[in-house]
Figure 1 (cartoon, each protein chain N blue to C red):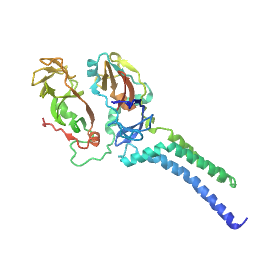
Figure 2 (cartoon, one colour; figure 1 turned 180 degrees about the vertical axis):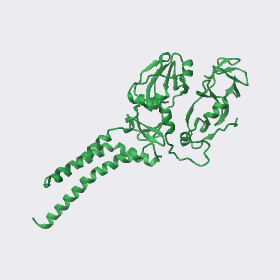
Figure 3 (spheres, rainbow over the protein chains, first blue to last red; figure 1 turned 45 degrees about the horizontal axis):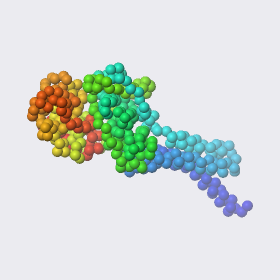
Figure 4 (cartoon, each protein chain N blue to C red; figure 1 turned 60 degrees about the vertical axis):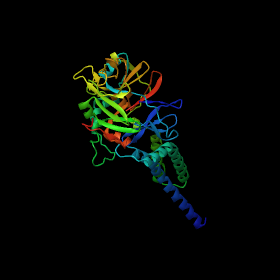
Length: 172
Length: 235
């Protein structure tokens, strides 16, 4: 085999290794940017929100694509890799990518607060779980009067209900 | 409180993030992002659409139960996260840092609770402490005479149009009255906290309710940048 061909093959392999190592970094940036841009301890700008919306919308597609690309690279590079620790190194980038793919299907805002889709209700006279001085959000549609204790709405942030036939969402 | 139907389609909402300390909801049907405080879609296919607001009061349970004895109350789940949250959320909220920009010469500290009114494109913020001290407050917002009243529980607040027989009227609280009784200076009719005349020439009539938002000053100001501010003595 001529020398230059050998050299270019080695160059391609090096490129493959570099791509394999960069894929988890790129995927991590993809999911981390929205997490840091849309967090409670810093102010937001419209541009940052818009970027986060786009990244979040495509995050699963991007993560799966990165995972498939990394898998394909690892399979290609596997042949011709002899040392066991280099083989281990080929598999290693797949682990963060699997984790990132899982994370894109998570809603980390709902790890702490869970929106309420269909809550239960108690008659006003029997609601011993609310103190008299506690605040409620009160809504009345037709004859249907419903109180949403603020503490509960603050916990769920979003509480959906039907009041007097009207679909409403209490938010706090 | 929002109606969760937009153009005939019922939307279900999830939490999607936070925008300057006000949360963002995402609807499952289109994936659009909605700002909680304004009910406006800010990103996604429904961008620019608004949820219809549903009139609601913020009252103490005590006052609400007196007014609606046959109403129903949302029941808490008894999950562990809820119990943990429920123990001390007021204190925790008050300790949260404020990250929205704050100017020199702000009229109040960021976490001052204000009663916000928004009428005919004009917005005005009333510190809760001022309402507490001066209730009933009669004022003007966007050219509309308004009446802001604190209930006899010292916590519930309602706002009405301060119009009696088509004209602006002053209102006075009967000192120490429980249930709260207001008298208008025009006809001498007596009004209760729901805005209904219970005695006098206008008995049976109702004042028009005005939506209000109890909010932190920093949040109100973020979403109502040109808000006016009420100071004690403005009356």
